[in-house]
Amino acid sequence: MKINGKHYHTIWLKENDPTVFQVIDQRKLPFQFEIYDMKTVEDVFFVIREMVVRGAPLIGVTAAYGMYLALLEFQSGNRKEFLSEKANYLKSSRPTAVNLAFAVDEMLNYILGNIEDSDLHDKALYKAHALKQSEIDFGDKIGESGLKIIEEIYHKKGDTVNILTHCNAGWLACIDWGTATAPIYKAHLKGVPVHVWVDETRPRNQGARLTAYELGEEGVPHTVIPDNTGGHLMQHGMVDMVIVGSDRTTVTGDVANKIGTYLKALAARDNDIPFYAALPSSTIDWEMEDGINEIPIEQRNADEVAKIEGWDGKQIQSVQLIPEKSPVANYGFDVSPARLVTGLITERGVCKADKKSILKLFPEKQK
Ligand code: MRU
Image 1 (spheres, protein in one colour):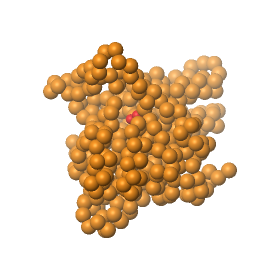
Image 2: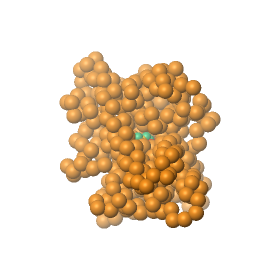
Image 3: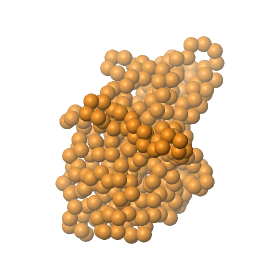
Image 4: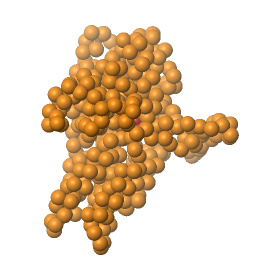
């Protein structure tokens, strides 16, 4: 997708230097556009942990390149042990998004399976590139599947389709297209009139800062709303559908996403509004059946809640928001149970949020 009319991905190899990867520093958006270099596995851990990059698919691809950097870093000793240690280290950077473990394991297994090859470095780099490309293709296909749902609503309604989204499940959270935003971009490009209600998404404000930014750059009509506004809009017929992303979806259809998503799912159900989660298969946890009890929920630094960041006209400033002595709880994600989810929009099409329907789309995962 585009920034200032120029096409970008969220991660790429530095021109003429296959040992440096570059990402857009998302901590600075929408105020400053800066590129961040990653040269070591520690750099990769840092960018994921500190949310220089964030969003489940992008976290996965970044970690895949981290495994390639681990391979370059190996000097002597037991290479298998060294790589397994680096894999666990990278996986520990953020617990909720399953794409991270998926991508790291894919890379580790691939590298170990080709460990004796003289061109192993090149092969590992291509493997990471392939994972990146598959996330781009997933976004593209999710967009096509979700577009049909938006078009159906448009044909019934005959007027602008109002879509509510939470957090940033846009191209900035992926590589291109996004997940929740992919159908929106496809509809916009096709001339289907859409308008997006963008939840600000405290505490890090990924909606206000990132989703609003990327929709604006693509010219998609949108309005930023405080997180508590969605229910009111739904009661007044101002929301036609909700589309969110996911950080981990169980094989039974429970959807973990940014904290606050569950409340939108409840409000949508109460108002008979379809609630979709858009996600690639790399976000499905094929081993997990009970999202509420099994998905690890990241707890983040209290400062994210106690302070708020903004632009003072010259620089990004962080100011205290609550009494200095008040304790804070900062759960990063919540789980919307499958019964509240109208459907899952995946790269293989749309299915109900239940095990039978998910496995029908992905029969190779049947045990
Ligand atoms: O904490 P973040 O910013 O990584 O959380 C991101 C989200 O919750 C997204 O909605 C989710 O990863 C889906 S991304 C396509």
